[in-house]
Image 1: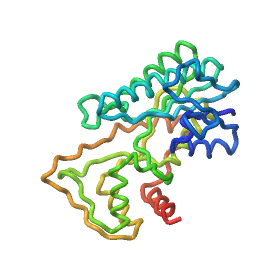
Image 2: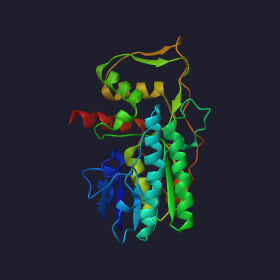
Image 3: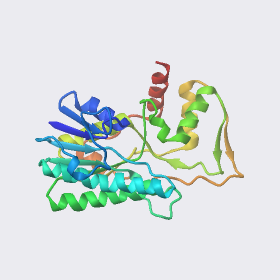
Image 4: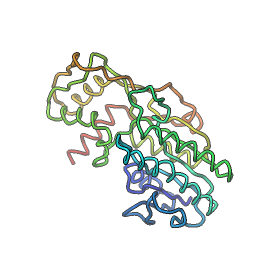
Length: 280
């Protein structure tokens, strides 16, 4: 297959390139250090894809913020940028478009985790679905939960989890706000890459969540981090602080049943990989 990865220098884009390059021709696109250079804010006429692309995988995203300028940028990149990518793919008769969204697109405005990122991810799904349907471009929307992995700076997108890792590495205590041991869902980068590879190979279409079958709590994450770093420390709940809410979603294994693959990397194995990566 001939694969075009948009966001070729993103953590996910780099991992996808490494995996797909084993058996396919891979072209990367992005703002820098890619085979094709463009910005999602560029005019649509300045964005041209190569001919004979079998699959476009769109990983690029803006993570939003709280200021008006940050929200505008998130809208421009995540929503309008996605529409431009779909249109450019349709122009060269791409056979399959895979949009990497986020499970947070399922959040509503009542959630404390709701943000410009979650809003624009939902909007990007809707605009992609509307356009691809109008031009008969097969579309798969994949919604991963929180990603973690071994790539440098990758875990900076998960600042609290990364701070737990750093404290565990130093044998320091971990403080969790409130009295609730909130649950989260994390999935390893390598599992997500293998899932996307199967989606491309099997030409899967539709919208699917992509989460770990097992939720974890912050306390469980911290205990596992101490274990893999072979350090000791206390896990303190600061009950005078506001509780952190759960950030988990209804179990949905439809995608895994379709591709005959379930995430395999346990939290302990995933964190051991990070430990080994840091040591080396």
